Length: 244
Image (cartoon, rainbow, N blue to C red):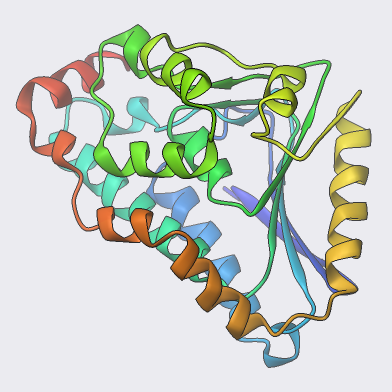
């Protein structure tokens, strides 16, 4: 079953999570995303002056790890973590500017994935940003915290997102400087992402240089990607798999 679709529109690449499900993060979806990224990388004419936009159909941008797929298997939890960390490394080194168009809820690992884009736009009428781990009794891995620290500059907002599991609306996220723009509807959000992408295209930046500079900017994240200590915590894995 198709989990995402890649469309090329001029100098824009638009990656869409298809279907009306929660777009949970599992190995199949991660592999599909990485395949799309590799397809873009292989097009040498695309590495300068192009932009990647990621968006989704339906109510959810992504509702986090696919715990139902993992079932009661700690090995599957570890596999999802490993594959997501590989995807994040791909995004941070990716030789194009990236935009996440959040047209629904972005939760837990799904929010971390969104945060790994350079720019974020979001709809106002539905959806929130939500790190659910404290609410459901899960430890947050150090590499998640590194991403959050790089993307949420306000210490009080960062505290509330992590320790109070506060759900942020588009207006709150915009006010806090977490996202770049907020729009009234899903359609306007998608249009706004395209408009932002077209503005970025006009810069004509060298993609390889852009990717290398992003790696330096987010060195703190890259340094944490080698391990997810929470997947080796038997109790944490047991809690995660009990949430299926």
